[in-house]
Length: 215
Image 1: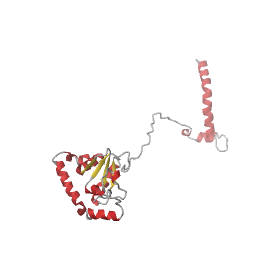
Image 2 (image 1 turned 45 degrees about the horizontal axis):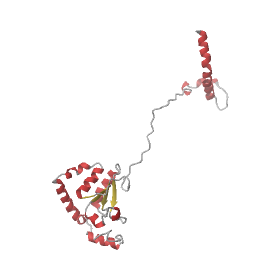
Image 3 (image 1 turned 120 degrees about the vertical axis):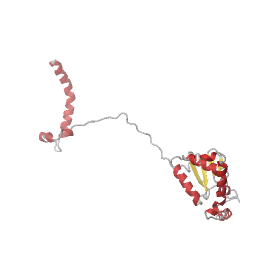
Image 4 (image 1 turned 90 degrees about the horizontal axis):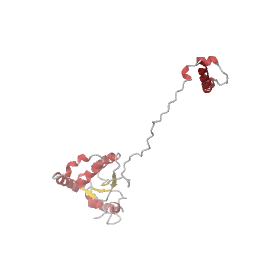
């Protein structure tokens, strides 16, 4: 048995030498000379090195940040036509836009913008869009009035707000109330009549033809 242990020790000896040599190299000072006293004074933890390999670490692929999504032609599910000059309207638009940052489902289109064109919005001219709320689904379907609000709210996780308007007689009553607001919203918000707004846009050259600002 002693001879077997001797052979085993001899077999293991070459593997231990590089580690010992590495330890001696670590302890060499800048002058390159071995200092036994300095080596003895150093803590044993200085020479201990534990390396652990984690094979189960998973790297998640990068994800793109969800933005407003209002102007993305590839991701939106519904387009909201809104009057950017209406202060009360903009409160609701800003709320929906903030919610939409987490959904990217709504494409917001300001009909008061100089760049607004009926051609890009199912032929809806400025006067028609100003008359009441309009929304356009991704398949081109146009929805108006309370249904437009319900569809928009559903896309940002607030469908419960208008859920009851799916049923009669609530639907009829809600649309009637909204119709009154749409008819008098210019006066309520302290703005001039639509006819004056159309005339001002023509004078400013924003209505290039009758299709842009139909009277």
